[in-house]
Image (cartoon, rainbow, N blue to C red; front, top):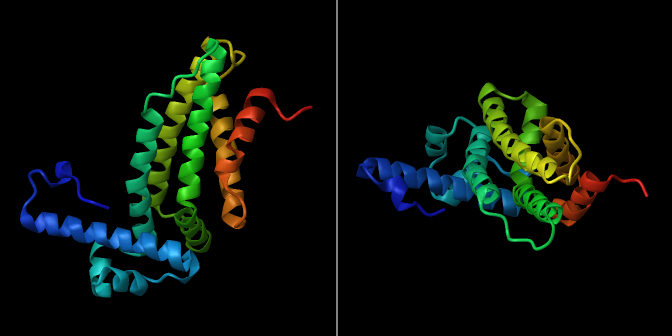
Length: 212
């Protein structure tokens, strides 16, 4: 995870070194979770990969959950940026263009879940064991709020072009996000399921239902 020049602007050398150490710890954690499996990774393993003492890790993160939350936070901005990118042009009617935007929206969410499934699994396990701390809850609420806001705007566009029947955009947005989250939860317990493989099915069921 390279430091961007914008992050370094105006920082002292000490601050830059701290930022570099934090990034190195996050990179080491991501590598450890990906290669060893979430259940087997300890703070000691992350420190070893980063080439620092265990105490150094605790100087930056209170525990493994805090570290995972920080890692997901760095990746969440990439998710939001991807959702905000101009959708690829789709030829056809207004309804077909909306369907194209919907497919892109779901595809971006699905890729995020698949890419970060190990980290999400860590948080799920620790939340079940220890409960969800207030910091994690606030972060998740903030991320969900941003996703819901963007999904609502997309639903409003679908209603406007008559691709969706008139209804509550919050309900529609919640249903769409719920489908992705539901498949994501299933993928956490199954090693042979990728949400991206079901992205087309999510869009089809959302637009047309599951009836024959």
